[in-house]
Amino acid sequence: MKLHEYQSKQIFSKYAIPIPKGRVALTASEARQISEELNNRVVIKAQVLVGGRGKAGGIRVAKNPKEADDMATTILGMEIKGLPVRKILVDEAVSFDREIYLGITNDRLSRKPVMIASSAGGIEIEDIARTNPEKIHKIWINPLLGLRDYQAREIASSIDLPQAQWKTFLDITRGLWAIFRDLDATLAEINPLVLTADNRLLALDAKITLDDNALFRHSELNELRDLDVEDPSEIEARKYGLSFVKMDGQIGCLVNGAGLAMAVMDTLKYYGGKPANFLDIGGGASAEKVAAAIRIILTDVNVKVIFVNIFGGITRCDEVAKGLLTAFKDISRPLPVITRLVGTNAEEGLKLMRSAGYTSYESFEDAAQAAVTISKG
Ligand code: GDP
Ligand code: MN
Image 1 (cartoon, rainbow, N blue to C red):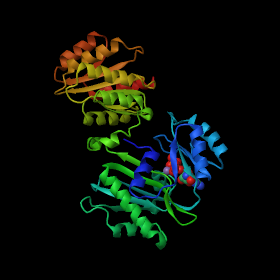
Image 2: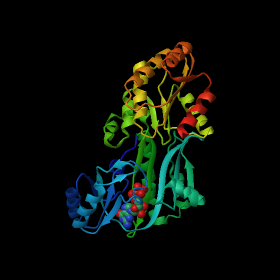
Image 3: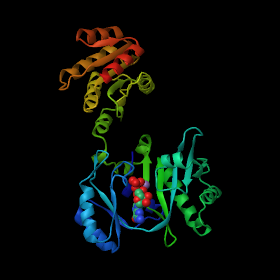
Image 4: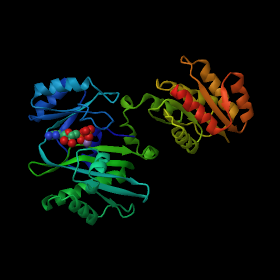
């Protein structure tokens, strides 16, 4: 679960990481009022859960309250990467000399959290990795010992931070590590952390992503979930206990088991196709759950073909077939469907599908190739 910048900044401030003065607003007149209170130039920032807001025009500096009002109106009327802007953050504008990147995430390979820093902050870390890989510095954190001060000093030195800033920088790294650990985050990132013209370190941007699987330990954080800006299909999927991730291809996938679902992604790509989603219906899925999955896949207008790949173990293929046929009965947008059923009650399942006129395969490869061909047609 991703938090908004303004939510992440509230958490930063609890952990003593310095942030600019400011507040979230829902309307342009609120933005004007905040600008009056701050009595300074302000920066108006779209609160949407995607990166690259700056490039998309979602971040603007206003010189006075009147401009703040106008710019807030513009930004509140925007869509950024398909997401409508419903909230804006109005912060005091800051002049700075340097932009630093500082983040913590999990390094799966070394099975430890890693702190990443760069003197080339302000742009996305993937871009820094491409353009200035030598400017990326990492230290691995032993989860039992936590971040050690000597490690933070090593980072400060690697990004050529002036000695005068080291004490504050160490406090910031401690705060960021504490957030990452206390909240069960998968990402805690400041980009940019700026060195202001008057020599203060300030987190101009904030990004925290929480581990959904640990949210049960943080009921207070669950309330921060912003259903407004999540993909509606992902919300619907969560309701039915389906693991669903939307993607941008044309082949809608319905699979049981995360491993098989991954294999489906790979195989479709291998044959030159593009999946529209990852969807694991889980073990022992009922007809009702399968029908819900189909409805969710169909809300994506890019989907040209549905690929059902079921390996029946606990899941019974005939139960899946019944779910599919129920869902297809009240479909407004008829689409070609490729099914591959093997395992428990596969024969009964295939019979049901075939008698309803649907093409069914036993071979994964044949089915995948058929789906790719249709998706291109
Ligand atoms: P992102 O593009 O979504 O990551 O949004 P950021 O909050 O990181 O802002 C993008 C860029 O806008 C920053 O790297 C800064 O260069 C600039 N920016 C953001 N806030 C301010 C500000 O208060 N003053 C100035 N001068 N620039 C800002
Ligand atoms: Mn940023």
